[in-house]
Image (cartoon, rainbow, N blue to C red; front, side, top):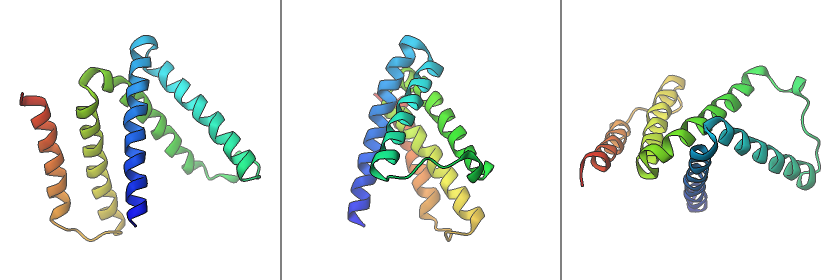
Length: 140
C-alpha cells in the first residue's frame, strides 16, 4: 500500500506541474488552445503506448458504452478550467481548491453509492482543506 501512496503523490505532483505548464500556455494562447494541445499530445502518447507495449488495437467506439465517454468530457473540462485558474490565483490555491472539490465530490459519491461508511473525519478533512484555502488567501 505504501507504494500506491507514493505513486499517488507523484501523480499529484505531475498534475501540479502539468497545470502550471498549461496555465502558462493559457496566458499565451488561451485555455481552450492549451487544453487542445494537452489532449492531443496525451492522446498520441497513450495511443503509442497501447499499440506498442500492450500489442492490442484501440477499441472500436461501438465496443464502449456511451456513458463512459462522460469521463473524457469531464476530464477535458477539468483541463480547461484548471489551465484558466492556475495562472490567475496561483498553484497553491488552485491545488487546494481542486483537492477540496475532489474531497467533497468523493465524499458525496461514496455516501450515495454506499461504498464507504460515514465517518466524522471525512467532513473534518474537507473543513481542514477549506481552512487551508482561507489561510493561503487571507493571511500574509
